[in-house]
Length: 400
Ligand SMILES: Cc1cc2nc3c(=O)[nH]c(=O)nc-3n(C[C@H](O)[C@H](O)[C@H](O)COP(=O)(O)OP(=O)(O)OC[C@H]3O[C@@H](n4cnc5c(N)ncnc54)[C@H](O)[C@@H]3O)c2cc1C
Image (cartoon, rainbow, N blue to C red; front, side, top):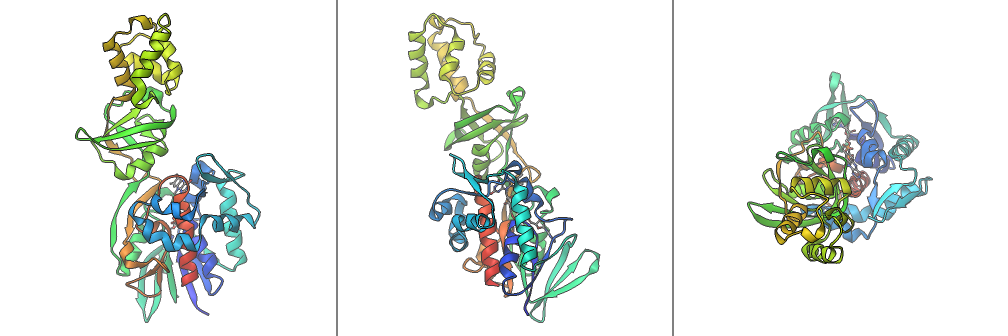
């Protein structure tokens, strides 16, 4: 019987093993003491496993890698992924945002089911097996583990992840294995990460979040793009889905201009209308029409030297401009993007040009397959990365 090695027991490797084990003796090699450490952290431990919507709509959520993923996403589309778990007893709930979570909100339930299912299918999961070297010998794959142990297999699936959150085991060593087998690696960089802001004035507001906040990206004074989504203030700058998704296109020294007013282009008009209708009230009454939570409103007024007790009748044109400017036209300059230790995923990885997207097999080394984040693919927040890991895992496992 054919033997298959899968390196890495994350979602991609676990799913690849389940599919491979239907036809071959499958060994799943994992360097950590247990499988799926990163899966357990996903969605803050709640596991945002995938997203609502047609498979076609997923293709635009992976930057320029959407076309490459087409084969895998159609092989294992979101509804098929959910029905795999559903028929084995896991119920899911959909958020209004489109994110899908297990109803229990426990990533551990997903991982437990995967490891149980792997055992049932006869997958031999070997933990503390850190694969250090890979080579082809006589058409077979020779793997050397820590401690020097050598194992030989007919097929090899590399599913060793990227290099973000290295404490979970994905420390980039999979890229070295792919390179030993002749593959080029597109320089890995942190993706889906937060940003630090130069002299950040809102440190005291860490933890405050703004749903559906408009955000403009300015580079050297020019508007580059506009985004909208949930924004989170941190001790060092900004995070939250809108920042994580935008981070793919951000650079140090870019300026981010959040619309804390939530009023968009109509901000000044709305302030004028409110002030004339409530001339005897104080400036703080404006908080009712602004999207920012009160503590942020108070901090922005203080920074702009505008007393909250100012009667609206005394809000001069100049003061009104200052107010609107501080709520929706203040640029926050990025000093640095969060590194691999804080990035949710890794951009870059094994070059897509060297992988057949219909099978996930290497175009360079026959019998070698790839699955998951080790490939130069990264998606938006919202469940797109786990979906890509499961879909590429299933396709690689079924093709080898
Ligand atoms: C904090 C956090 C939250 C996240 N939340 C979500 C979310 O809610 N939804 C979503 O879609 N995505 C989320 N992601 C991203 C998602 O978890 C990853 O994209 C996904 O885990 C990638 O799966 P993978 O199997 O390719 O790699 P990994 O999950 O990284 O697994 C790779 C495995 O390979 C093992 N390994 C590495 N090198 C070797 C070696 N040399 N020998 C043996 N084993 C090795 C590692 O120990 C690891 O277990 C999150 C990521 C983080 C960090």
